[in-house]
Length: 336
Image (cartoon, rainbow, N blue to C red; front, side):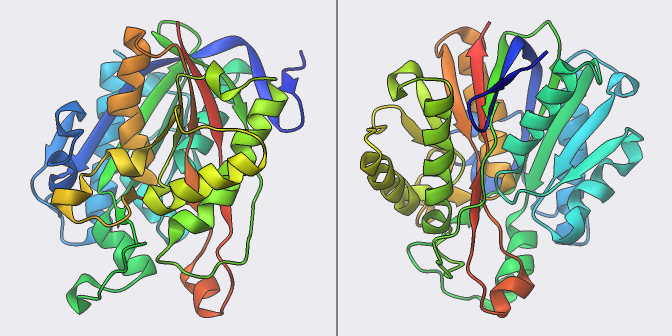
C-alpha cells in the first residue's frame, strides 16, 4: 500500500484522527490573545520545581496526562509517545514522561518538533503500529535562555528581530477513528541553510525552510494556497513572515491571505514587548492544541497546512561559528 505522494509527501488513504489536544502554558502566554484557549495557565514559572529544566519536565508531564484524559483513555492504552524539546539530549522530555511508563521515541527538530511528532505519530497509526499514540513537545523561556543565550540574571538586551521563547506544552492523542479532525497528509522538510549566523534572528534563519516545505507540499499535492483555509507556520515571527512572503512570491505564490504564524498569534507585542513574536517548541504545539484544532473540530476551517519551523543550532555549533540551518515539517489537517 504505497501512500507516498510526489517527492517528499505522504497522503494517507485513511486519515489519522486527532482524538484530543491539550495545552498548558505560563503566565505571560496566558495574558496574551489566546489566553482563554489554553487548558491550564501556570502562575508559577517554576511549576513548583527548583530548576527551569525540572519545571519544563513537569509542564510536559502534566500536558501528556491531560491529553490522555481528554481522549478518555488510560495511559496503558497509549502504544508510543513521540516527544521532544529544545534542551540538550531532550532532557525535558525524558525526565518529564519517564514516570508515565509508556514506550517513547525521543525527537529533535528544534521548534519544528511538533510537526515531526505529529508526522511520525500519524505514520505509526496509519501503518498499524499502534492504535493510539501521543505526540507532544514543550519549551520554557527560562530553560531555553539558559541553554542557547544567556542566564536570565545577566539581563542581556534583545534586538527587535529576537523572539520570545514560549513557556508551554502541547500534546495530541492520535488514533484510527473517533476524532473531529484528521491528519490526511504530510510533507517532510529538508534542511535549508542560507548561511545566516544570527541566533537572535531565528525567523530569518527558518523562513527559507518554511518556503521550501510549503512549496513542495503545493507541488506534491497539486494544490494552490487557496486550497487551504490557513497555512500556519510555527514561529517565524514578524521578520520571518516578511521573508517567507518574498520567497514564496519568487516561486509564483502569494500566501498572504492564508498565512498565519503561531509566534505572532500567541503574544501581543504592543503590550507584551515580545519583539518579533513567540518561538520555541511549545509555541506551535500549544497554539495548535488550544486554538487551531478546535477551529477544525468545529468546522470553521475545513483544511489547514500546519508547518512548525525549527532552527537547528546548538551552543557548540554557534560558538564554533557555524551557520544556523532551518527545517520545517508540514502536516495537512482536515475537518472530519
